[in-house]
Length: 133
Image (cartoon, rainbow, N blue to C red; front, side, top):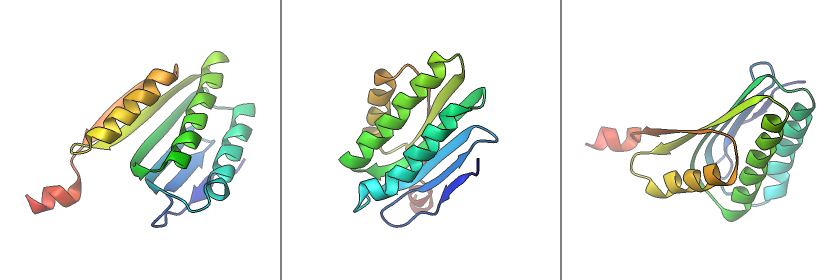
């Protein structure tokens, strides 16, 4: 199974899913004009991964903004992590958010409440703000 690599655009995030190390990363903005066109390959890759997953799976999500259609697909992906846990595998989510972005932190908290996969919240200072200070 080959890695899934999607380069970012102004409307879609960077995606790197690697079966070899069980690491899935999503970073940037997710406001695609055609959400199915963007998310279908991501979710299909993950469905294939579920057939023969690593013992440990980590999903890193660092999104500065996403729309409702992306939110639904992210939640679907997180629900799929429940299947790994149900099969006895270990999975966890690293949810990154900017120190100044309380909304993104709260969205992560909502997701964590909806799934049975552990979340680790990682706050960081936005480098653009740090330079301005």
